[in-house]
Amino acid sequence: MLSTVACCFISAVAQCQRPFLAQFKFAPGSRLCLVCQDRNTLRQEVARLDLEEHWRFRLRDEFQTANSPDEPALYFLTGKHDD
Image 1: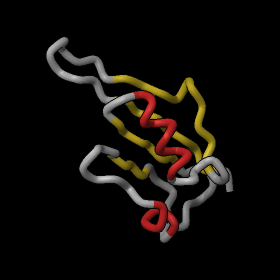
Image 2: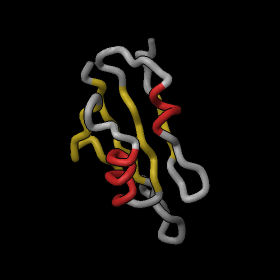
Image 3: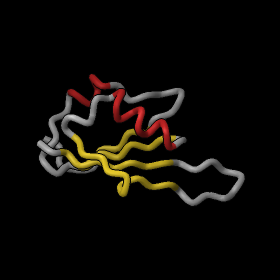
């Protein structure tokens, strides 16, 4: 049973898949962090990975990296496991 933070970086090349996450058993209160290259993809990935049933994601748990203007920002969304 996992009780630490799990992190998934979502890009156009490599995507985390639902069966991959389903093989893990998470303890109540575990944290999941999704990392994407744009804000809209964060919410799409939550739906695609079917995370809303067991994970709680809130807008205040969404962050953006502070980069120089010539580098694209990364967006983070953290969620807490309910079960």
